[in-house]
Length: 208
Image 1 (cartoon, rainbow, N blue to C red):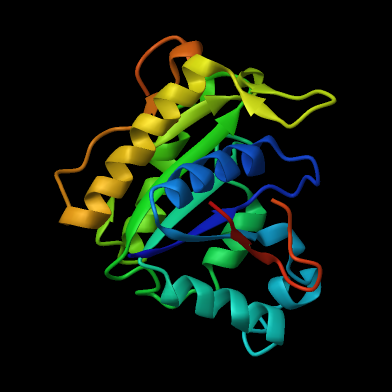
Image 2 (cartoon, rainbow, N blue to C red):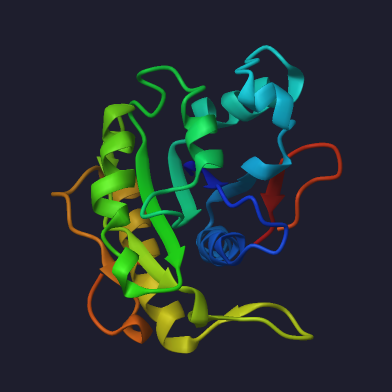
C-alpha cells in the first residue's frame, strides 16, 4: 500500500489548514494507506530558514518526502499565495524532489477571492518539482472549519466535497495518473473548485 505524507504549511498553532489535512489523512488511513503529517511550523526555524539540510529534524523531514508515494500539500492563503513557511521548506527539496509522486493540493482561506491560488501559485511549483501528477485540488473556506469545546470538524457539505478530492487522489495512486483537472471550491463556498505533532519531531503518523 502506498505511503502518504501531508505537508501543512500554516505558521499558526491553531491552524484550520492542519485540521483539514488531518481530515484527509484519516480518510486515507481508513482506506488502508500508511499516513503521516509533517507540520512545517514544528521544524527548527533557524535550520529551516538557513537551509541546513543536514540537521537531524530537517534531514528526517526531507527523507519523509522522498520516501512517500503521495503528498498532500496544504496551505492557508496569505497575500494571494501559499505561505512563506511552506515555500521555505519546498525550497529545500531537490529540483526533482516530487518526481514520481502523486500530489493533492489543498488551500484554506477566508474568501472565494483566493480560490485561484491553488492553480496559479501552488500547482506550478509542484509541477516544477517534478510531480508525476497533481490531482484536482480543493479550496476550503475558513468558515467551513467548525471549532468548539469538542474535536474540530468540517461542515458536512465541505467534508463531502473534500472527500471527493481525496478519493480521486487515492484512485490516482492506485491506478496511475489521469488527465489533470482544475481546482474546485467546497459546496459551502458556493461553486465547484478545495495532529498532533510528535513530541520530538514535526513528523507524526496517523492512526486509522
